[in-house]
Length: 105
Image (cartoon, rainbow, N blue to C red; front, side):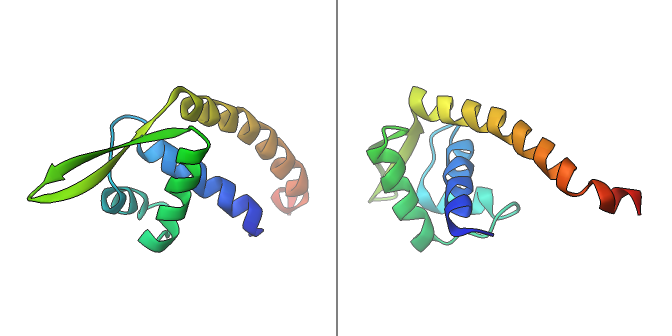
């Protein structure tokens, strides 16, 4: 898969992982693992990029004597998920067109 496309998909996956409740890095990796392979070393640059894009915010809280960063989706992040859903419908139409001959075989 093209790197730029995969990067965009991973961004959306991370946003979707925190859509319903705030979460932290390790938990996000665990939540995504059934759907997409992502390591913590890949996740943290994505989280920084999403924070810089104002699609999420970060708060720090103590957990078992250690500080943990929790990520929260913003209105801009929710809007990105909505836009992605609309874009995906168009991509599926293109996919169906490209694979139409395979379905008739």
